[in-house]
Length: 314
Image 1 (cartoon, rainbow, N blue to C red):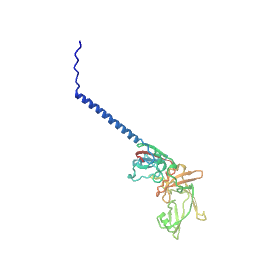
Image 2: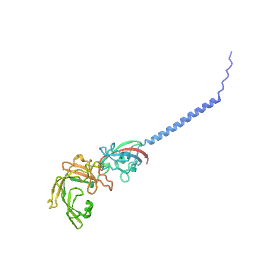
Image 3: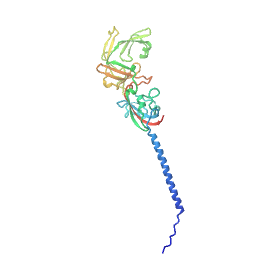
Image 4: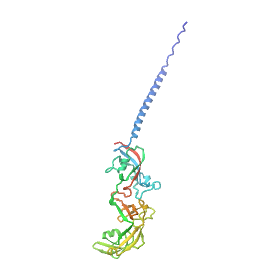
């Protein structure tokens, strides 16, 4: 005998609606998550785009010589920290507000750009990346050969010097009076005014043999040492037909190359550039404040620690 069929249960409409709502919410969250994921991939791909030629790049940098000394930077804290960041001979602090991130066009060098090694060195870098770019001498600041001077270690100087009255006043800051004895504006030993005629002044050098002078600065300065010691080796007042000569010995060695700066009679800053022991000569390399030519970094390998801040594609 067949049993009677069981009555079917009726579904709760509220539960059905809730299930539909939960499913809709899950689908919506999944869709939003997918969109955000896609956008993050796009953003990440944009951020990881390597710097290309023509891009506008903002960065901070620290420029160093091979021995680690800093010659330039965009960072104020680096400029004022001489303990962690020892400075080069010619490093000069600028006004505080001039220390700011550097803006450049990647790949652009020469007129309107930077030095070649720097302009090309940022290519392939990424926003946020820190890298030391090596700029070889040929891709850095070129040497002006007219600003290199070779000097004998035993230098012979004329003992008689003639100049205009205006030059005399400029160098000595006094009036030229015959027989007046004053310290020489460069060599520091005494000179005597022997004639004033036709707008010109002639002086006679009167050094003492064995005398040591410091014509290019104070080597013992605690704040800004410069120059080196020079010793008078001989004084022959009858040489060169009576004009006389003074022979001096520059007391420097090869270890002073790149480690000594000085100032010449015309106020030009120079660095000791080369030392030739065999030929007993040395070279000084003069800067030019008017054009911004820096003798210390021209013709040398340079190292820039670069931090990329922003990149605007070309």
